[in-house]
Length: 309
Image (cartoon, rainbow, N blue to C red; front, side, top):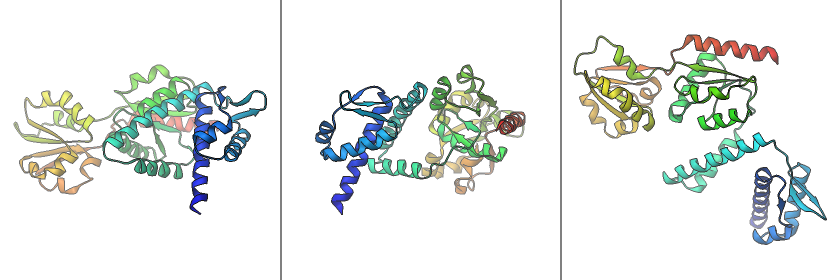
């Protein structure tokens, strides 16, 4: 039984290698089955079975005189998206390994994603550069719109827009990200920039906070921490004592909260661990979006696309 499983595994590996080759190198001649078999320690017959299967699916073409070649199964725009996504995932995998995850852990991640992958029926695509924030912002947006929202990494979305791969979608991004994707707008997509609110903005506009109050901001990510220090810290620190930590830093050093007068953060960050809220006198939290007009525009575009179907 183990031998059979091993043969099946090798069969799948060869198939995936040939699919990748055919996508990225359309028109390229593929080595003879005997060569592939020898390089991968597998029988020539198994390689030929794989090639026959892929030939029927339109990935490759086998002819006696010209040999086996990869076919142009996908458009150039699709191939560009495939290659860009591959490089992006390679970076993600590298980051996971550096953070202590094994290759088996990453394979488990890939399996879980693929096994739960459903047809994309959503009309709304959301993206922003800070993915740690974007995941929660997406959920918030879904509640506001009462519909499914697809999240795409910002660079992936930008590439797909550049290659005009997306069709009949409402593209949503925060105002500060919007200028980088707006130049790639075209007829098949609608773009809506949304006003986002940073929790520290509430501090700058508050009139009931005492001078020199010790304000602890719980950053949603390392990127958010850097942004808070660069944009808000110098301004607010002239009136208050501002401290910026990530959630992990505060969870590891909860004693720091004994010195806080006010705890500030996004609602989803502060609600993840109620113990953070018990050690301070006052908590100020906010959602990501404050743009009723923008939400109405998204709903209008959704209705427009629905009518066209």
